[in-house]
Image 1 (cartoon, rainbow over the protein chains, first blue to last red):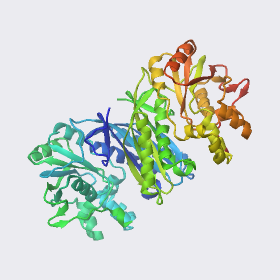
Image 2 (image 1 turned 90 degrees about the horizontal axis):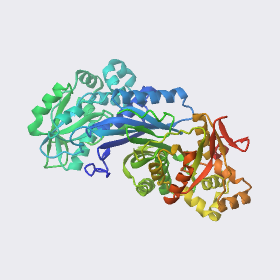
Image 3 (image 1 turned 180 degrees about the vertical axis):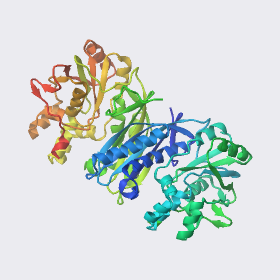
Image 4 (image 1 turned 90 degrees about the vertical axis):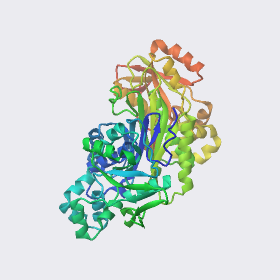
Length: 301
Length: 301
């Protein structure tokens, strides 16, 4: 068996035959946000890994986890992280097979997910000019809200006022019905990527790799996000573009398929929004005539 | 698909259907021996992960790697680690599919290997009373020699005098023909385990899990090891038992199969040695009447 040619090596998941694999890791020191319990931290690590295979239209079957454990971490902490990983996998229909535990100074977690091709094709991070760009929209904006409040030192306050945003951020559930959407409309969906660093980054990656521009449409923010943006003086659009760890999926759709894809998503009760469309004259992300910067909140930290 | 019941969760590799998976990780800080180049360090990390699936009689197909990179690590260092991982996989007939790179203080590496069942059965870490215990013997003793010289501060000297031991330790190649041995004689081989912490530990694990004793035979050390043991005043047997990172395989063989297994190993040019036999009256590892301690060199560090 040979690795699949269709997925370039700079992609976020890789295939060999019909098996799709991802590995995703984090240093505790650089990634453990202060309100996350060990259970939630483990939950999110598993979601981060599954998200990358889901964006390829592959179904997660099982995962393994490797932990670096700090001298001061209690057995209880370690068990709760592993339980978070396990429950997150089970919730998405996958199994925790086993793992490895290592001595560490800073703590780290790696989750490797094994998935199988679920639709007629494994989706590359491809788009082409003249397609529409959609996204699943469960955590878009909300993740930006949470990270903005964190980096501006307002998270304790914001957590009380915007519990829905924090809940969706803290214990994310992936839009698994995307698998069915691709299975039912495989010739309509050209490519996909998960949104894990920020929507701006994700779209820039797609634009650069495919040498095209994405013109963003006017999209409406949820009411809480509008409320938050007024309170803290930040544009809703910034919360959409410069978040991180959304674990939603951006996907390119053939123009003549838009109605079909929207109808089937609606039947599946999969929330999707139209973000914009691809054009070939330039490379980059545009709103009206202005270029969107390829950055995330992390870069303010 | 469900995880395989035959492999308990405390095992070192796990299966789902015919797919066998392992993940194995290390902190640079606690595992990077001073004479290992970045390339060799990466090579060994891949071998460590493949070794666990090989002991299940599964053939490594592909792997993914996750790296924690320290602020001072150069791009060159990171690339050389990845090249070591890649070349180690390729040498054993597997592919590096992709990976993840993370910011870290101490540095870490995790390799996750995906393998497929190769013989009629996936081997558990099982033994039963009245079987013979064999091992592949490419690095047994030599790894003990190298680690003894390291922990006693003599490795620079020993490296010059015993280059073969250091070579086998530093860039290990796995006994892949073990796959064929199990494929040809599946009903003869009851169970197996790789030797990655020390032979004493590995045998103790088998003894405890199966509630039996292993009586060790008199086995002959290679000439260099006899030479080393005289120079530095350490028993060859200690170098055999209390090494680590051997990546050889210990396996239990039905008594009536011993000639068949030895003959086929010889045809395959797979070096194996008879270590002893299992008995049911006690639990533990014995030489003559004395109990062998379940420890490794690491515990002197």
